[in-house]
Length: 206
Image 1: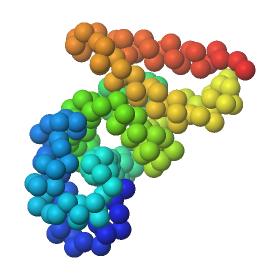
Image 2 (image 1 turned 180 degrees about the horizontal axis):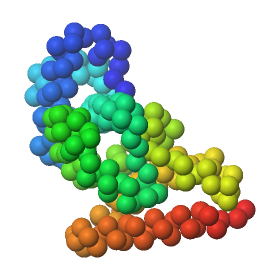
Image 3 (image 1 turned 90 degrees about the horizontal axis):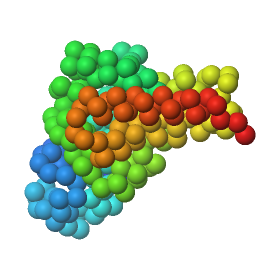
Image 4 (image 1 turned 60 degrees about the vertical axis):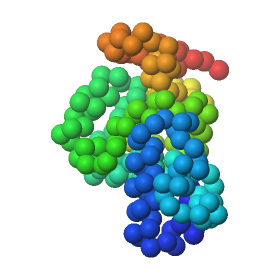
């Protein structure tokens, strides 16, 4: 999260930093962009950068949060949620984005940063985002957790439903990394894995 000094900047200066950061993170994966390059592009002294952000990851997470905040707001307004336990619903929701979610079309570099760059980011960055910003945070509001209301589920599973949702979301990245680049085959494998995962949760006993 940016430091208080960042939010004390004028709106125009904050927008300049956000715009430049978006431009750069859209051009290359996170790990290929140096902190010195970012600071040079933004046009501020190194000392000023560290008065605003802890490090490059802090700035990157803020940019990703910028997109997530907009998507969360719009999905909340439209009462739309992803159900990661039902792949078919996710597929329908993603196909509907172009029509139903104006933010994904309107926001600059949405696909480049939220999809392409994030998928190529180092594992530790994805892990840190998941645990720092996703699990237990406001962005869980993007996901439908109704599966975990099933009376058959062990109470410990229900208590950790947000972690379980994060695991299902991570499956897509794992399969993408080790898949054969055939989108249809990867999607079928994802659905198979989710089916096994759901059945395992239902059958789990203390």
